[in-house]
View 1 (cartoon, rainbow, N blue to C red):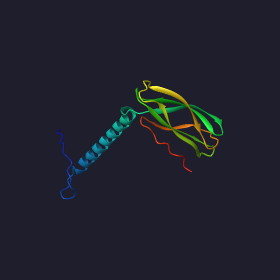
View 2 (view 1 turned 135 degrees about the vertical axis):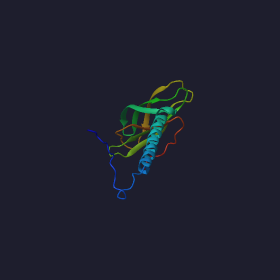
View 3 (view 1 turned 90 degrees about the horizontal axis):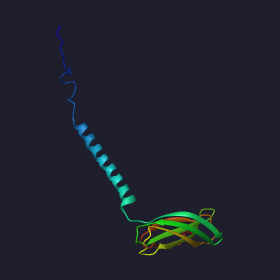
View 4 (view 1 turned 90 degrees about the vertical axis):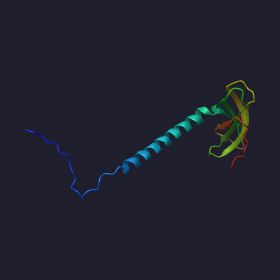
Length: 146
């Protein structure tokens, strides 16, 4: 007995030939998405590890009175650079009651980690002491929003 293998054939004129255009478009779209993902990952690593910057962490804060909050801040920065941070405090209702740009490390400071206690003057009783952000360049101190 002989077995004959026949390929499935479509009846002529009933179906179009399968196109390859859809597969090519899908490959191009997937390639572009993959390159975009790689670019996003590279950007995230560059901003996190590739740029010299100062990063602050509030260790503790203590409300000293109705008009002063003592903020204990630790800053990690590149050796030999200055560190400037924007500190703020908020009242019970969340309103900002104190804000000040502070130089936490002078230019040329050989330390990589600097820890400073700063007394922040407030316009009302505060319940928090926060670091808004830090920079290696001076930060302009803006008054709190009304």
